[in-house]
Image (cartoon, rainbow, N blue to C red; front, side, top):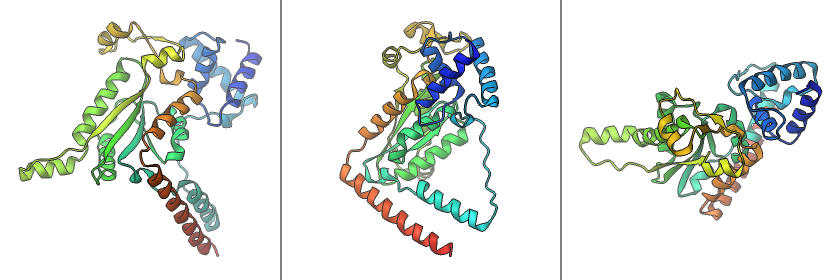
Length: 298
């Protein structure tokens, strides 16, 4: 694809989204539009061309994100800058746990860190945690998550994990693995205490719901396939059911992914009155905290 045509196509894609996109998301939009074939060499070529386009200013750097390489800078020029940062943080980050008002607790889990920003945009109005698992989650990551879920479900409510992963052998196995390990680790300290005391332990219910990708979604969105990696030891069972093609979650058009996620999360709100009440409480508490912060700035 010629450089000028590529720049125009990429800028048109980026203009259609309020969120930053990853290189892979832009690539799949170009493939879906029939502008480039779905091959590794074309992906690498696109990466090289976009470096040139961004260096020259033909494509804006601010429209891209790479969440796998985040650096946190917590230094300040002055106390006043710190206060200003606190103001901004308070406006955007102080939010009540809205799920405290509901009979269930909800989190969104996603296989790829690069897609967590897209799903965070989807669930922002619901103050719902988005947890990127980066493939198979580590023991430490799962144990921390299990502790969080156990703590937020301490009043006896159940937890629902909305799971977003590739439609491939490993992606399906990751959903299975997540369910099994959360079943094991949620309430782990209480389980150990009950075992030592030789009393019955009532385990909390944690349900991992695979929201995407499904085969119906693959057909609905006419997603671009990739060949199944035959080296994957889980491929035999997958191929026998779906054939030798697989599909990446990145291939879903980002706005469709946002709508899908938002719709599912919204459907879990059972008590709308309680939800609105805790949002009002959240608003009044934020206003009170802002007044306290303004007093510190005098």
